[in-house]
Amino acid sequence: MTLDDFNVATRNWFEKNFKSPTEAQRLSWPSIQKGKHTLISAPTGSGKTLAAFYISIDKLIKQSITDQLSQETRILYVSPLKALSNDIHKNLQIPLEGIKKEML
Image (cartoon, rainbow, N blue to C red; front, side, top):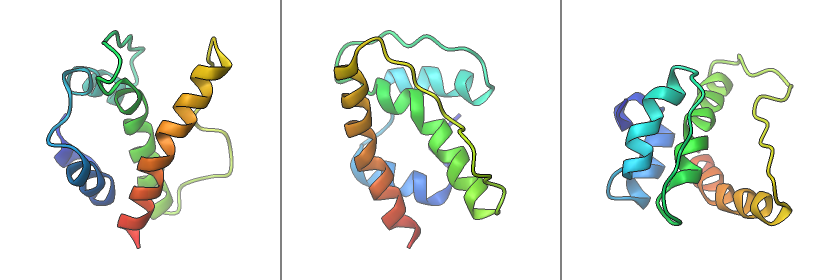
């Protein structure tokens, strides 16, 4: 899976903010795209959050464009620590806001 497989807004935001996908992203995205359970083990700052969530964000964007996005829970993240959950939430706000701007 390459960035060319992503929706244009999702891809444009990524390319404006990063030189290229990290190793964690390149190795995990194909498995996640296929719906397989995927364990990502990598150092802090290696792009694990986007590795884990970016495919799902892209799918939601694509569904919203084609009016196939129903009002139901699509992504559930269970965190062992409240602080980690807060970090994930904060770290996803930037790409979500950036992709939204790309779509306008």
